[in-house]
Amino acid sequence: MRKWDWLRTVLILAAALVLTHLLKALGVGRESLLMVYIVGVLCCAAFTHGYFYSLLGAVVSMLMFNYFDTQPLHTFAISSKDDYTLLAFFLIAAFIAATLTARFREALLQSQENEHRAEQLFKEKEGARLEAEQAKMRSDLLRSIGHDLRTPLTGIQCGANYLAEHGDTLPPAEIKKFAGDISEEVAWLSNLVENILYMTRIGDVGLQLQKQPEVVDDVVSEAVAHVPALAGRALTVLLPEQVLAVPMDGRMIVQVLVNLLDNAVRYTGAGCPVRLSVCAEGTRAVFVVEDGGPGIPPDQCEQIFSSFATSGKIGPDGRRGVGLGLTICRAVVCAHGGAIAAGSSALGGAKFSFWLPLEEPMEENNHE
Amino acid sequence: MNEAMPSILLVEDDPYIQKLCAVFLKDEQYPLFQALDGRQALTVFNDRRPQIILLDLGLPDIDGMELISLFRRHSAAPIIVISARSEESEKIRALDLGADDYMSKPFHTGELMARIRVAQRRLAQQVAQPGDSVFACGRLRVDFARELVCVGGEPIHLTPIEYRLLRLLIQNRGKVLTHHYIQTQIWGEGDVSDAKNLRVFMANLRRKIETGGERWILTEVGVGYRFVDR
Image (cartoon, rainbow over all chains, first blue to last red):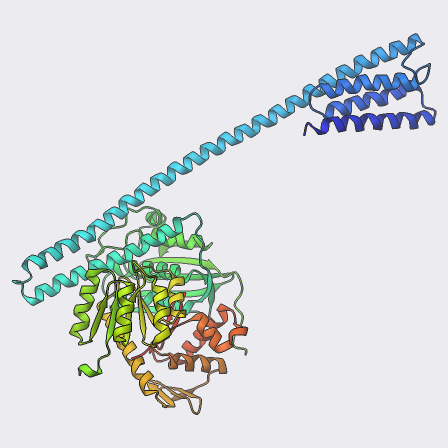
């Protein structure tokens, strides 16, 4: 910025010089011409940094007036006492004006800088706070992952050890039961590992969702196929009448539905109905998973998505829910630009609904 | 009975999984060749010409993808890929290179056996080259000569593209077909329709033929489709 100050000063003074010559040609008096120079000096003070250029402008203006407008013309000599006085007061007035303007300008810059610094400080503080929050969340998450991993591992280890040591004396039915338990623990562990992997993928700063238009039918049937516990349940699936394609990362949304369906099965009794419905509402595709179980206390509807406390809880059938499941659901849905919420279902139990943006409206695709 | 069982090459670097799978496969009377790395796999492949290949992609010496191309250069044996990574892009690459099927770890032995039986049936089809012009299974009946599709005895109207999709799937039943492969087969290389169109056509086709609660077309989300082979 400062390197332009020279040019500005020269331009302003040149403009003043031209203007005075024009005014002189129109017959304007000398005192008025001095006013033009004063304005020139004020402009120098306003558009340059510090005192230097405005003071320089004042001196040069005075010399120009002296050279062009005082007798004898085109010399720096002065013949009249009036001119001496005029020039002396011009210089004084110009100096005072320049100094005041420059000071005012500096104060303005200073306050701007202060404001900027305060803003930066605030941002730094905010960043530190966010970082601390994230660090806490990460350590909570790790602790809960640790717990969720160790518990089924312990079950597997104990069962396998027992089989290895006593397998030869146990009746076949007993062996089968142990093996079945181990298999169940492993299935639970697999789903947990899947969830953790998704979590890390979402956690990556550069996460790029592999969005493709997926047909709702496909995603839903894939999800249902991945929850074997649904087999004995009264499951109702309601799909939109028109084939609906939604831009999404198919595997991730399948995982969301798997987690929600799994929860619906694990936290409700054997005879409870489960319903999965999908419909288009305006620019959104809305997915709803609900059940006829005991439901969620209203004060916990928000909390269950963020706290990891729910993981490892035992359902009425004695099995654990999928740890981290809901946290991942929310992260995935949010990454898609949608939202998820919990509430009460008309079926009497819990209701989880989430929506994804449709982006482009579905057109009829049967033409060929 | 042994004569009818196809020989299997199992390429897997984890000795424990290698051991377990060997127990199951031998129980089922499959003649089995085992390889713990890519080099061994190539040697066994060249000496024994296995009829079905189970291939773990994460081998210590040779990239699994490279092995698929090498196998494919000399043999049409069904290749079932086993992978511990779940990225769709990897599955798609393996399938486009010529693999017939893939399984993600962890898997059930029952699932593995089912996939092997599917491969076995594909093998039988390859040998017999059936000239059958009618496909019938459960409620679904497709008469290729008359281009007639019936579900539960009722004729179903399919659009020409839906019919071609169904024919392609049935011809390759049991095998996972990637979106890309289907697009090039139906619309041709130069006129690859957008991803959404294929999915919508497929969804409409499914809604038309899967009316009786039977499932024929399985979606491998993010990868492609597979026609059930029972």
